[in-house]
Length: 314
Image 1 (cartoon, rainbow, N blue to C red):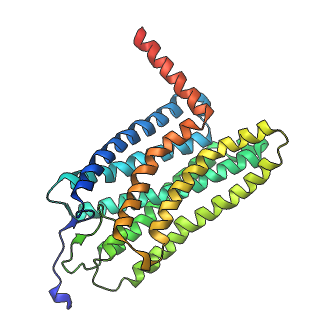
Image 2: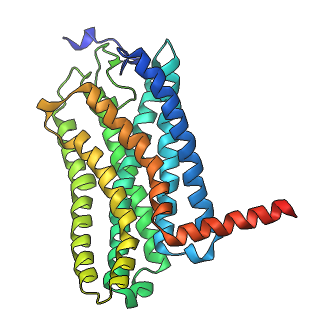
Image 3: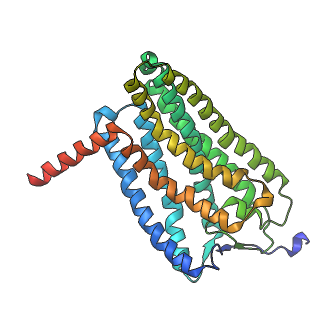
């Protein structure tokens, strides 16, 4: 097709799961309930980590960042998704699609780096407990969190710009429920070799390297835990890592399936379901995992609730 024949794309139509109208209605109700749980659970964790002085530590600072990230991530994707599920005109503007993609990619990338940072924090806490306050000082952990956000946002901006400047040749039907970069790349009618290279490098930097660092950290953590003499000490040390490890498995499992699987195994429906998994289910489970498996958080919740009930009575 000649360049002169290209027609400008001003909006996209999201056709994901459109062949399953009953499923869309079911997902609308399910995602709405999950979104409310995400807002409530993550907001509660942030409030508790601020109000309880015992939680003013690097671990809970990172956890507060993770909760805030999950709120922003789901707020950028779930409300538009709910509208798409119940609307007959399943469209989104070109700029709206670009904004949705840059935000979701940026926050997802930030979470990848942040989980690696949290693994390093657990490594220092268990393998070098005496030096932990010195190593994980306020300047260091604030900078680590800030760079997680910066790296995630810069890689997202690069991928989004390099995708949206390419010609779509009038093809504006996205076979997905959101403006997901893999679905958008299928609509481009020019050479996307550079985009594939950028995405491959980004996947290595954002997915593979952080996951490798997490794996190495937990090798040292496990080695240190096994050297602890008392069973109670081993149980306490492992309990401080189990919540983080569970979140890592849930998040990276779905992310790796989406972005690192062979192209020959692409199936649109499975992509959409997996997208819902790491876009909705994981942010909903994060506060539950950290509250149910963490004694300090449970005690802080009880303390805040009892204080609130006392204020109501007075």
